[in-house]
Length: 185
Image (cartoon, rainbow, N blue to C red):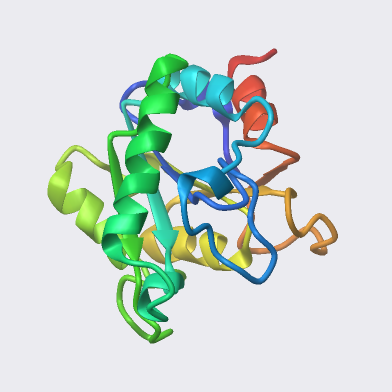
């Protein structure tokens, strides 16, 4: 069980991107920043979360690159603008990890825990037992379980997922609702 009262700056927050921070395009990809639309309250949530977590990273599957529908540069441009907008709102993201592989067995493709391991290589202070993944898919929850993290499932894109689910510690309707629950508001 996840006790939000225990969270402090020694904790790490892992976030999925599409369906968590921004609206997910149904059966498609975000190709440029004009298509990137923050969920209402997401940048405010990221400010709250930045005040409560020592490290915040994004872990995102980006198969659109593997399908050659977009390039690594296209993704970098989207992420650079996203980071600027998050920072302008008082939030922060410390690193972004993505997997463009088409192979479901690739160690970095969620639900596999490769991106968590890469984050741990870059931030030695990460303790997976004091980490949370917030995502909108069961693959995000399984990623968290595979790395030994706590899990928070957002009901943004799949609100009818049957609960309880052994991979889910907590549910929330949005990133802002999770941030508010964390600070008791």
